[in-house]
Length: 264
Image 1 (cartoon, helix red, strand yellow):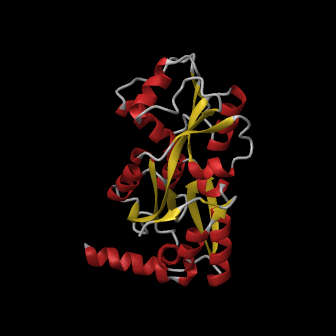
Image 2: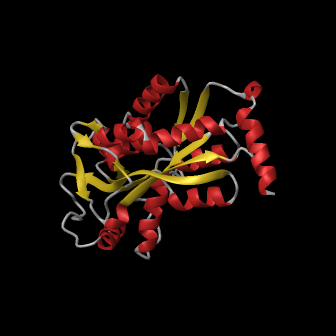
Image 3: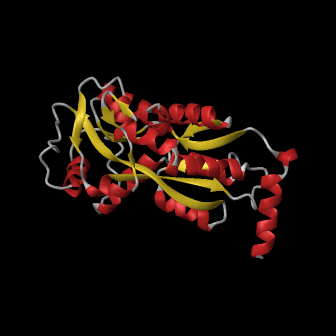
């Protein structure tokens, strides 16, 4: 069976009639909103002549797209789903690429008084019982999955619909709504740093180990999806982990702040 898999991969990787000079990356809005994807894509093209065409959506949508074979690689931030993606045969191997963290933001006046809470569990209980609004992405993204896990880990059901607002949209739009409604929400730090419409919002809680936010990258399985550019995809992954891509991620800053950190 292993010999058969090798022969199939060899055929589709090295058959020039099936080759194309670009790869399609299913990725998250956070990597696009920060500007990192554009920098990585531009530099990889300059070095290799291989174009990276990124599709930036929520993690849940990116994974579903990849499960249909739409793309060559997957770069998202929901580790359990990524591991299952590989186990189910959609991807070949998951590589740790980088990480940042999630933060809870809200009105500067902090009407729910969460800033001085001693734990994340206490904060979730305060937000659940207060009459202040919480804005949820509700879009099956990595951020939405993390938010749901925070309620669950605090042994809480979702708050009353009067105070729990579902946007069904990306992080930037969710932050815009939180800004307009002076409400609380969960966001990845990278999107928060690059977000320009903060108004009276500010970070009220961060630096908790449970808010750790790892990103993984996976090449789609050429046995399951014979059309994928597996060799070029693995070349991009190696460039990100061991080549100049790693240096670009390490040195990437917005407003003099680091956005992502490399896994050592």
